[in-house]
Length: 299
Ligand SMILES: [Ca+2]
Image (cartoon, rainbow, N blue to C red; front, side):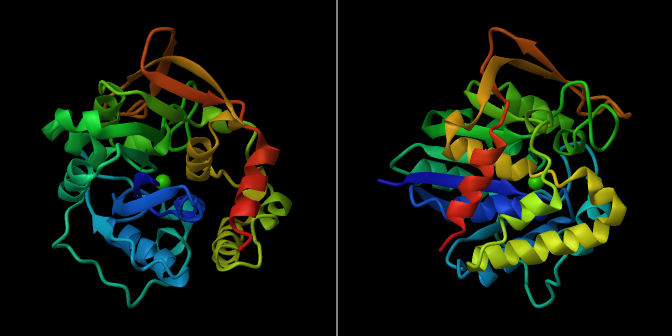
């Protein structure tokens, strides 16, 4: 039986490639893709997801809108990093069905699933936090939660904070303190995995997934200009890769404390090694990571 999976995300260029990797995993049954605002407005993130599923013939997978803002705050978007509409592509003609609701969807899918559900969270954790805040019993039927977010001693939206945790620190704190094992991919996990343009070209295979990846990454390098010299950070793609091939990296075990202030330290995180339910991914094998995507996008 296939592993049931729900992906919560905010596409976003790296969310896009992460979704493609997940869609190509023959062992997974993607029950749905729930959306949070973050990299772009909720509306843009939903439209970007519809675009990704449409261009790769995956329109049978439901896309469900969720949070348009954080639990206590306004989202700060990432258009300046990701480009037009938050993913660099024209999404005119795609329409958002606001009758649907991410929390209702996640809850009912977990309740109705025979097998425990894997949850992969690639954006601000608002939808996930609200779901389990309302119903902690659901956790019994969750296989694992994989979270991309946070940074220890560094940041990307401020010098101290990573984008997803900065955008909803209250949600991040709630999720990372759930009574559930969590695999965490942070900016520290990514230290060796900044992809230069040559490495990115390796992901642009002849399949439809490779072609859409080529479009999105080419637009990103063009949009960022000289700022792209540091390389492309495939944050969300790493999260999916780690959850597909757990031995692609090493881990350190512990707990995480998250700052919920209203300044540049909002979402800043501290890792406390030792007792704890958080498994922090470190030392990603970049060659295996690139090979995994190339193999997945080969057909
Ligand atoms: Ca994301």
